[in-house]
Image 1 (cartoon, rainbow, N blue to C red):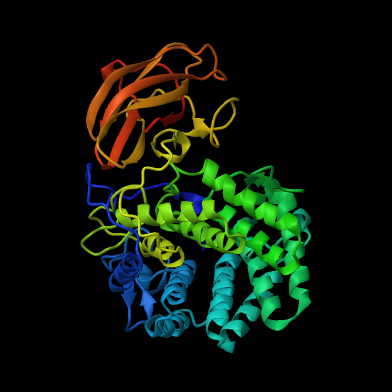
Image 2: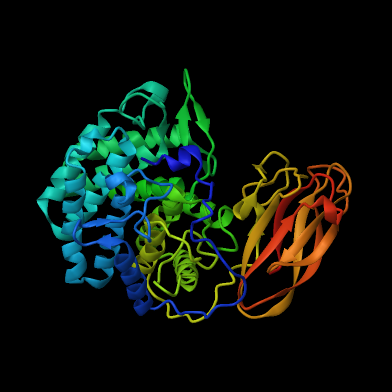
Length: 505
């Protein structure tokens, strides 16, 4: 069940593997050997070959996310589906008999832990397995995988009804009633795969119906809302997660490939470009929390790669290669495990398997470019995509960039941290874009743990819809750096500020 995103995906346990230091680290090339290293790190750290199952955590202990078998020692339902797909990513890249055997083994291990899959009340959980089973069938030709996918699809589709105009319910037991992207978009992809495997056009009809509902109820302009809930015709809940865009673009691409209708391809490209243009941190996919959120960018990147292959889009390839290199450069050297934030070094605490699989996966399905060096990105860091401490986001006032800004804040201890990667050590001029509608304000700025400005003046902009900029020279290392903008009244900081972005780095 994708429960973490419903409750608190942005809550970070202190024990997790978060960055423990600032400063440069050796750069690494993204090569096929790196892809092997990352996959070996994942398997050696997380895979229990006796149980044929992946552990939840790198230390093989039970921590906060304890939803899977053996009291949470092993990964839960949808995590294991994603880790199974990671094995398939590696098999497609290498054609290795080791990974071919693992495809069958992980499936067997999962069935041993979950003898009755239908005891799970979450249709999205079942749907991830239906989709993964169809991929396994396409790779291996094993009829069992197709049959299981067909069975699961029918069981899930039975929860499609006319409430809210259509769509499949998230849960089977009637609790937490909502219809979401996470349930419906993967079923569209599964339906097309079943249509291709069986020749049954009924699957195409069902896919088109689900897509028409999804687009009419959960897509608003360039944004894809998370779910519909409430009485009557329902209310769309606007949560931005990369995997909603990823599954939607995957559904649109599948229908384009099945029908040749160009509007589906337009939808897929629009979803892809929204994330690239609005949900990145200097061109890198964002940190979306621990637990379930750590796997969201894996789903987006995997489907973006399919769109990249189908369209031969060079900009998508460049984006994916930069993110793959970013992830690999920030792996933990001791075990080659990649953490949940690809823009920062993986720390010394335990890492969750879903997070590690996300980093390992992108190195499997993206072609290596043999680039040696750091990834600095485009130098633009949207504040709403950075690491927030006690600050909320908003998209009410006009004139902001990206998908919003940090809403007015003036409380001690609040801050935003930008993970900034640089190609070389240098002094750079950072431009801070803000609105100070309540009058003159100020904030402190620290760089790599040292205060660069204790009380940086942010003059009044005369209104919240009017944006201003200030600049500050900062000394940055080659590789990883942190820039923190925060509030501390003891340093003289005062008044409300909306923070849009920093740039020029």
